[in-house]
Length: 453
Image 1 (tube, rainbow, N blue to C red):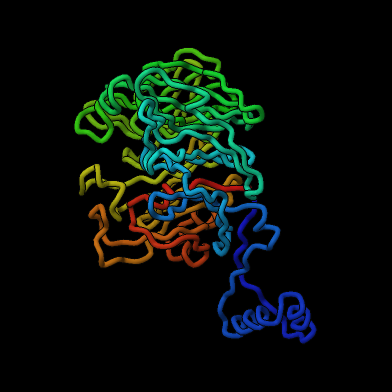
Image 2 (image 1 turned 60 degrees about the vertical axis):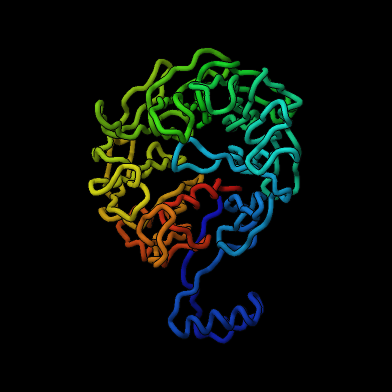
């Protein structure tokens, strides 16, 4: 994993040293650095050409008129390149909020991307051919991280014709060894959205051969999102929702489900916003509201259910962002005492940041004031953090009615994030990666996919 090195390039007063730099870097670049240092201004040293070639951040980019493609941005924020050019890439809307769009998934080794496209006969949202609705997508593709190798792995309508009625193809995840991709098919006998709990089929496709094998066929699981594939157990982690049509008023039930990949019955736990660890060994469950209130906590996923691993002291809603290598992560607790719960995640309200360590059973306050910081993810080696910073006020109102703050995406060292440095210090030492968005609209969350290597 490439690491962004930020610092000040200094030069001695030796004429020989300056001449060497002039020839090595080029006259204009060296002259600029010399002037900056002479004026006492720090100059950021960007990654080398080799470092840029080793990685970048994958993101969705909309081109208007319903066209969307995948792009890669270098870790210095200066270079962008396409991975796709059809404009048909589908950014699936997640059930869990906030969460990244999962119409693209990076392989475990970070060297390829699985993504989905809609066919020519499907509209921008996904349509039908007059008989069977294929929902969000109808073809699954693979592309290498450098964009040079691309192939279609699966075309769903021709390979897996659904039963009579409506079939919608949804989320998908990689197996830990990168050999398979599992994906969801939701079956609706009545018109879409009117069934209380859709029946679900889950299949896996072998990456090398394209062979498709069913894992479970038409179980009543509900609207389903695949969250992960446990690396030490042959099990899929699902989030599902049963009840009225999504978006309609009324009550619905939400579950974390653990499903054996070899087939079998899913184990279910009531959960409104589960966040499993990258290896599928643990899961964070947010606090539950009355009439059965519970504090937020971490649980170990076992063969029979969930076992308490660590209780998070602040009994407030928030987000847990997992580390990839250490058993734990960063928990951001939100203060919602002065506004409705539905707006808690949107406005610039007081929030605190804690470091969570399952191995030592510690929850340590690292930031008493994290109001301007929106953590998105950590790099695969945990050395970098992708964060949104609310760095300026906007006189125009937010689309959701929150305060007029604007957020900008930054890459910052994880160590600096876990110190009590101000958000302005994060901005000064970080690397800007994107333009401005309204704070709390989660547009950065949805556009971001992850790290390529």
